[in-house]
Length: 293
Image (cartoon, rainbow, N blue to C red; front, side, top):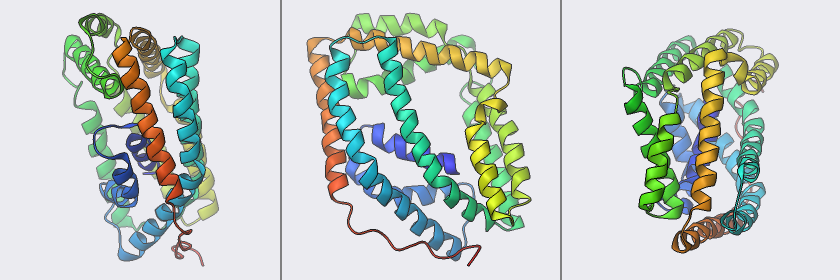
């Protein structure tokens, strides 16, 4: 569930379409709905969760959003002026650094919430985690290699065109050709999640020890890659390389019109973040006691 919060924040921040400001201002509600996909919260748990998430969002709005704005205003012109894999990797690394900070802030909140779960909720959590695993694997489970590669191309193009606008014929042909390098990973990813979740659920058997649970969650979050297995590690690394290479090629191939749209879109996001950061309001009340007082 901690991971769901991090993914939710980054999806809202880096997505396009609906208003970023509207989505961000409703992140507390979206987060609760997201976690409710896994556990039916009691009123007390819901009150704690809402207050704890409000505290994280207030910190994030004040501390992170101005940095995001500075970064986006600088990175757009730098990329369209010509980029390479090292520069693109630096962009990715910066995003992961931000995600790490959100994770570190979220671990104690997640631990307190998880420590409050009863046995019925633990069964519900395990069942819903597995349902999500099946959902993740489904697009590639039973699909042919060509179908999985076509899905990669479609999803990559959808994400990229949010910033570039419609691709040229040459750019689409490049993605079509590079799709042949994609290696299906979703079934492997679901299996990795099952291995990780087995230790996660085992840790919850000792959830009365809040300090131990907090340390265990932090360790599980930091050491996710040890659950990958050799096959997923190899496939995942190859696909990361593919995505980075394709991103570099497409950015370097942008037409003048696409470059303008690319920079404008990043600047629009930066302006949204600055406005959100300036509209944080007072610090929220401290979350109510949930498991220890």
